[in-house]
Image (cartoon, rainbow over all chains, first blue to last red; front, side, top):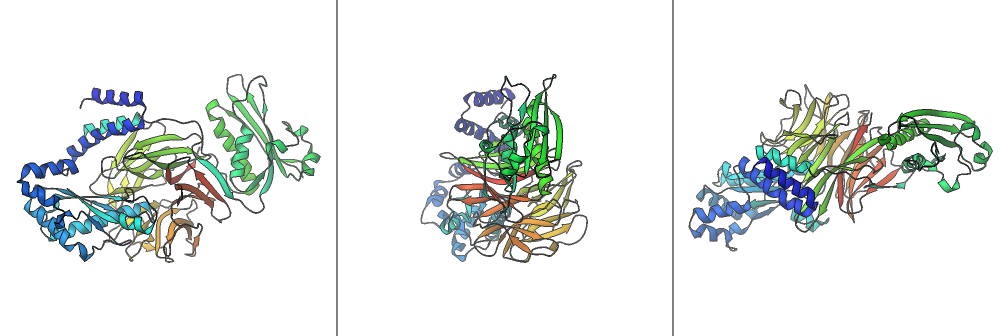
Length: 176
Length: 431
């Protein structure tokens, strides 16, 4: 993209002065950057890889609600990075899938509930994502297939301020 | 990378300015025997025109909001003297008034202004303080706050902090996105300015000691980075963009270094960036979480949060040598420390169960004094005079800001008309 095009987009934002449009327009700029700088890709393009790359069977495997691969969120206890044994089969299945599809990349997104301090929660979210990655590496995935990111308490799944919301927010999301 | 830099330029096009008070500050609890004071209407040299600013009103609001004064309502004032000789001391005494402030605003030949004021002790019939201050138009509000600072210090013995600014982050939800905005505003909520708007999370604004720059964490590249932004120009640099977490910026008092949290070497550790040479020095080395560094006012130490004992607690390390020393022992959760300006105490987030409070840890005796009721209080920082702590609290209306005096006697609410407000950071004294 040339400076001129960006300038015109910027000018358009100024003229429109509408926050909704600003946000919509900003994002393509950021996505371009993300792809240029990172080995991982976002959810949409990663799914395109799976469909183009291989037979239809891998695609249906990921989408099968009966498969342990359909488990995409791992929940945690308060201030803990320990993975419950309930998730053993799901993590095994994802690890195996990554082993069999070496060109597939995932992002493990770590999150925390809102209690306590934001920066501590950022570290806690990363600790959770790291714990999941560690298990996946032991079970067959390779390190460069897994990107980690922590949002701490900044991206709650549920905006409530009660036990149930907090439970839903202490999580690692597995994003293909 | 070039595209990235250009995308930042686009962000700057959104920087905008607002003239009204965005933050609505209310005193919810004051001291039991507030000091009686009356601020009379300032004289104005051009009676045919409207005065550019109501200085008495600004001082009245400052002092009333502090919780330490009982300021007489403007309609109850028995007179509005503008000279010492015109004060009818008996009238004021009958009303039980102890202190009055009189003053004048004069338009000078050069088009600037002279603000003069006298703080007068009614019972002794004596002037306690009197100043004349030449000032440019755009700085009249600031001078009014400086007058408040002088009155406050003369009558309470505590340095005033009205001529200061606060940084904070607001979050507004639309249908699909949350818009995160970093603002700064005068300590009375006026002159709010937007420093950055982003669809991705923003957190941890940190003022440089000279008040000219703010460091913060932004997720705008889909991962955390630490930026330093110049407040007056809006120009900024990304100072940390390693793999993993880049967060928790804290300035060294001399402005030459920035302490940060990075997870590039495995898990979160504390590092110090030399902003001049760009070199990086690792400070901590532990398997557990080490984060939230904060620089001691003498520049020698960093306090930080670590869960190396099993739960988050505050530790302190001398920067050039030594092992971390644990500072907090009471409670199951102590995090997000900030030193007081004197360095004798630390404010932090404290919990002994399900509720999170703002507390002060006395570094001389190790005691923790819980200041707030919770249940979800966070992000405390001291006012530069050390008398108040500003923090974020979650209530029915979402995130709001509040401030409390270090002795717990004075409480303020700082509200927004809509949306969440969080992550307050009280800036240094304006020079």
